[in-house]
Every structure is written in C-alpha cells, then in structure tokens.
Length: 262
Image 1 (cartoon, one colour):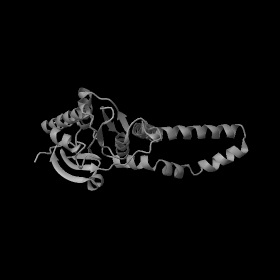
Image 2 (tube, rainbow, N blue to C red):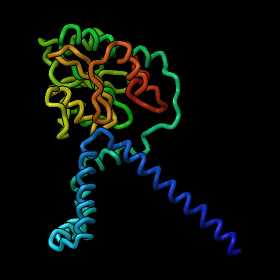
Image 3 (cartoon, rainbow, N blue to C red):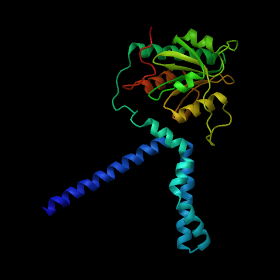
Image 4 (cartoon, one colour):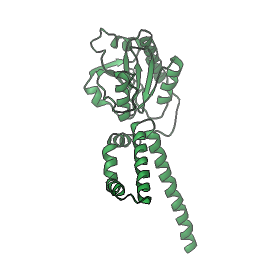
C-alpha cells in the first residue's frame, strides 16, 4: 500500500509540474511583444538587487526592497491590469483544431486584400478591423452603424477622403461591415515606434485588449500592415497579406469571416 501511494504521489507531482510549466509557457506567449515583457525585465533586476543586498548586508536597501516586495501581488495587479484583463478575456477562446476555409471566407479575404492593395497604391489611409472571438460591440456602438457586404468597392468608397465616414475604423463582424468611423483605443506601450501614425497606434491599442485582427493602410507611405496581439507586421505585399489573413482565420469556431451574405 505505501508503494502505491508513493507511485501515485510521483505521478501527481509530475502532473503538477507539467501544468505549471504549460501555464508559464502560455503566459509568455501572451505577453510576447507587449510592454509586459519590459516590465518583467525591470522586476527581474529588482529581485536581483534584492538578493545582492541580502548577501552583501546592505541593510537600508534590503529593508526598502523587502517592504516593496511584500506588496508585490498588489503591485503586479495594478501595473499589469491591462494585460491581466486581456488574458482573462482570451481564456477559452483559442481553438484546438484547424479546418479549411470556406468559399465565403475566401471571398471575404480576397475582397479585403484587394481593397487594401488598391488603397495602398493610391496612398489612401485605412483601418480595417476583423472581429474574432472577443466581441467588439462597444466599438460598433460608438461608430456609424452599417450592414453592408464586404467587397472592394464598398471598402474603397468608405475611406475616400471626401467620404463623411472615412475617419476611424471599419469593423467587420460575421462577414459583414457593421460599423464605420469607429474610434479605437490608442496604445500606451512605451516601445511603440514613433515613426508610425495614429492608425497604427489605434490598431495596436485595440489588439492589446482584444483578439481582433486589424489591417492598416498608411496614408504617408502607401504600405499595408497587419496588427494582432499588439504586434505590428509591416510592409506586406499581396501574397503575404493573404497568407496572414488566412492564418488568422483558418480556425474552427471564429466569427469574423463566417458567412455574411444576405
């Protein structure tokens, strides 16, 4: 009997370690490329100084760091509240199985791609948001509500400079354009590239809070970028843009490009 308990304990400890390792791995994937990485580096330095002060018997420094680290959980919650909120909204939204895209999805992607390329060639700025698992109703409500099919002509006309709704972003839900002129939150990431414009800043801000994919067309440079998870991939050509869109939406259970025809 003791041997059986010992064997069970061994398996339990192994499972415990594997679960913790998996959680740490997923957290690292989640914060990759975000400001949380820089903050974690700062905390690492603080912990290193703490242990050095302890070994070197630097009493005042050690006392200060001890009091600071005694409230470390509260400090982490305050500093990382944005990243914690984003993580919690994504729990359970990552599908485990892939599938082939449908004809409708392929058509929607083709129309978005053609519109983005056309707008980039004419140096017309654009911000195209594609909803996935996390709903974007709050942003739809503060924009101009539409219910239009996704095609190159409609997308192009919305972003023309003389269009009354060309400012802000368009939001695509369930394969339909549901809003235009939507205002997006700007990122507060200190490592944001200052050479990029407000559209990139807004795209990064939204994707830091949701799992949406955002296509940005730069008015100044006439280049197309894709933003997801707070990470910007710049200067995409036609084929790479399509590959990125298919990669983001070739997943079971997503909403953003499903169906949509009425």
